[in-house]
Structure formats: C-alpha cells, structure tokens
Image (tube, rainbow, N blue to C red; front, side, top):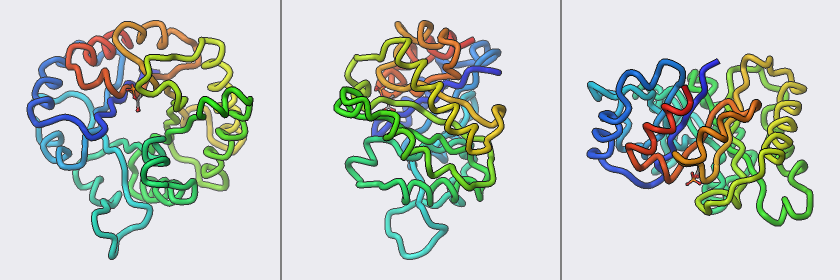
Length: 241
Ligand code: PEP
C-alpha cells in the first residue's frame, strides 16, 4: 500500500503557499505515495479548483452535527461539496483549546462517515501520561469512539502531544509499541486490516521522514510545521515513495 503523507497547515498558509506547494509537488512524487494537504477552510475552494495541485484536498475539522444554529461551524456535507476526501478530527490542539471531548469527536466521526470523507482521528498522550505509563489507557479511551460502528476506512494519527512542534521524537521501539497497541485495539473492534492506516505525527521533517517511514508499522506521516515549507514537504513525499 502507498504511504500516506498528510500536511496539517493548522492556522497558517496563504493562496501563495498553495501555488508554491503545487509547484514543488508535481508528478513524479506521487508514484508511490498518497499526499493530502489539510488547509484552513477558506482555502478549500481554491485547493479543489487549482489546476496543478496534485495532493488531495483535506480539512482540519468539521461539526459534530449535520446542520443548524451553530454559528461558525462547518458541516461534513459542506466539506464534501468542496471535494474534501480526508478530514482531521481530535487534534490535540482542538482537544485542549476548544475543549473537544471524545463524545464530540465521535459526532464528527459519524458526520464524516455519513458523507464518505475519510476521518483522520488524531490521538496521543501527554508527557506525564507517558512518564506514568498510562498512555495505553489514554489511547484506548480516545479510540473507544470507533467501537460499535459499521467499519469504514479510517486513518489513525498517533501524535504524542509532547512531540508536536518540539523537535522531540519517540524512539523507534516506542512508536512500534504504540502503533501495535492501536492496531490491536482497532482490529479487535471489527475493523478489517485493509480499512486501517496508522500514521505517526510529531516533529516529522525532511531529515527524519525516511527513517520514520522505514519503520514497518508506520503507514505514513502527519506533518505540521515542515509542511509549510514547499521543498521540505516535497522531499517528505518523495521519501515516502
Ligand atoms: C501536528 O500538529 O499535527 C504536527 C504533526 O505538528 P508538527 O509536525 O509541527 O510537530
């Protein structure tokens, strides 16, 4: 299966960056990798209409309900109309700053499934949870929203919170152990192996991408800061091939 590289621009970027990423990621990079760019919502239209943008269109969030009096929210149906094929949910920044709960994230998951957008469920533990060896329980709780569902294709992004934007990366053994735990949890909930891809996220960049992608259990990367640099992002996608 092709490695999956997802860019998370967070609240960064511009129309100009879209053009620069389009120019840097032309053609040959995509033989062996699937690339997705998750822009802020105002850029989704330009991304979908862009003449030479090869990566797929991704979003960073959606509402947990279908429609209604929810000022400022964006529904999964709207994302689908703009050609969004993947959407991040449960990013730790939203869990922290927007106080998103697992129940709310479960609602977003359902909305995405209803509109055939592949959810990219972000999960991860804090430094304290890793130090106190409670990371399994934390990841298990975050994954519990997948239980009792009709399985559909899903991407899980394992992003230790302490690795996001810090330049610190878990050891290969720790990544292997966390991904094995995630794979067991999700397949035990009835998801066929072919429906599940597990990404690593947290301080991935052009320098360490090849090493991270060579770990057998890593199906791809979720890339934040480095995805804002067109040549770094292009190199990460090239390394995935
Ligand atoms: C992220 O926040 O999803 C992320 C992976 O960030 P960074 O690559 O900057 O650590």
